[in-house]
Length: 489
Image (cartoon, rainbow, N blue to C red):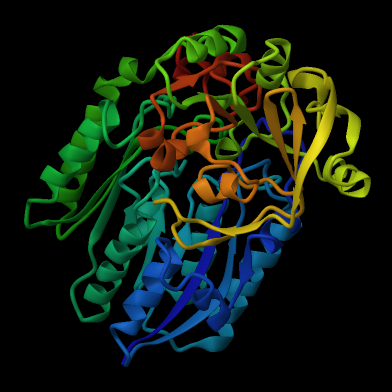
């Protein structure tokens, strides 16, 4: 029966977030191998959860799980950390063979200190080790920034088809089906990636409406043809300064001509809708006024420029400054700031204590100075919960110790680790019922919508300074041509 190897590197890097990412964000989220890697995700709506399900249905298959690593988006990885992951996986493949196939869970928008295409570099090294004939498949995020060479290095691949990404498990199942097909003796599929020279904002890449919803529908129609095994549009990640930036499509088919034609049609369909991906957003004060003017009920006020799932710092103070200046008289919560030192201060002071503190602007003053506040320590937690919403449902989350501070009507969540506030359990941990809040002010964007859009009467996005800011032309791109960037908002 088949014997396959598994490895995973799920990381999206923002070129404009200061610093480099080391081991700690991976150690606190996912840095596992062997049976433990699968057990942690068994029954969850994730790629490794789908793999566990796939293997359970095929008891004769043997799977060796090599290093699996994931962390929330942030600055590029340290070169030594990526080298450690790469070398461990390649050595495991070298020592552990023979193999019948390999499944990889890769994000596709990783960046490494000194290496702008680390997934491609890894796939080249893997093929150099295993040769051209061993079946290798992968699943990717639709915000991948990949060069077309990737298509020929894999026997098959699939990409998430929802945004928010609530179908990570389905993408893994599609990729594993291609692996099973190839291991079963089917001829190698022909993979083609078509790219277009532009960078698109991801605000309008949601699957339920807008231009990208139309593209995903076109992809489903392409897959109705018998020759097409998988047709996956790519949106790209706007804040990754890399030669692989930009949208396109990745298609696998039984003939190269069919794959190339379908990939070009999908990539052209994205390019034809380019202007519909652009938008303008109000500043924090105007956005707050819009939110407070919405009909009765809970309103989400989102700060996408510091969204941790776009590589944000959870440290920029623009929206928080507007909230505190407004002296709100309605129930509101701000989620969140990443400041382990402030959490430690709050814990040392104890529940009910009053702290004079500076909020935000800790990592860098480039996006605004800290906001001075006098806050009451309302709640302290250990920071652990399990996702209950549709995105990564069932997966454990560890924020490290957290504190809920209060300034008047505004609750402010401070966390020791940077894990996005995209699940109701994030708020329940802090004793907060989102439906009882007039304002949910969150550093987030589209992933927040998966669980919270049904709970909110309105969602208002603002444009504030941050590493994932709306105005791409204000950022120091070096590898992406300026004429690829969308116009200034």
